[in-house]
Amino acid sequence: EDQVTQSPEALRLQEGESSSLNCSYTVSGLRGLFWYRQDPGKGPEFLFTLYSAGEEKEKERLKATLTKKESFLHITAPKPEDSATYLCAVLHASGGSYIPTFGRGTSLIVHP
Amino acid sequence: DTEVTQTPKHLVMGMTNKKSLKCEQHMGHRAMYWYKQKAKKPPELMFVYSYEKLSINESVPSRFSPECPNSSLLNLHLHALQPEDSALYLCASSQVAVAGGNAETQYFGPGTRLLVL
Image (cartoon, rainbow over all chains, first blue to last red; front, top):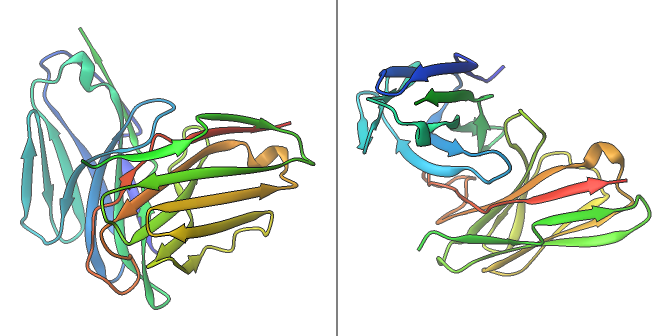
């Protein structure tokens, strides 16, 4: 069964304390992997799309990387405004189509 | 501009009511999606429209009826819902369809918070 697993479920950091979030997947026919940020009660906000192993993308304090089995979202010197749930979604082949499957997310809290 | 708008922001309805959720994008995207998200859970795909035609229905109950009047608009008609249907309903769009196309980024709207009493 195709699966997307995110870890840890929750993460508390002090402001400035760098860390990484993990998204591991066991899907066939990977077409792409997306990272989103979601604030409570709001829609997911797009961060990155990664297509192939070895690819890296950066935006401000965030950097996403992709291997054949997992992706990491590195957060460097986080600030309280980085507090949110971070979702990864894998676009993969399923029954002749391509569908996105989301992980359960990592809830990040950054304390000042 | 990567904006997807959804109306209403909040909706309270009884189990016998009929209501509609609306979604709009002006990015020229040809694929639009409906998702359902319960609290502390990931979004669950419900429907995919590609070039205004329904291409994926993830076994959604018939009390949810999607409609795509044109390439910019997507509706979700609700009838005889159950309390367990209460959730955040998210609309998204992408340049091309998920089915059979290249991977494309989905841009989400802010969602409609639905409460069924």
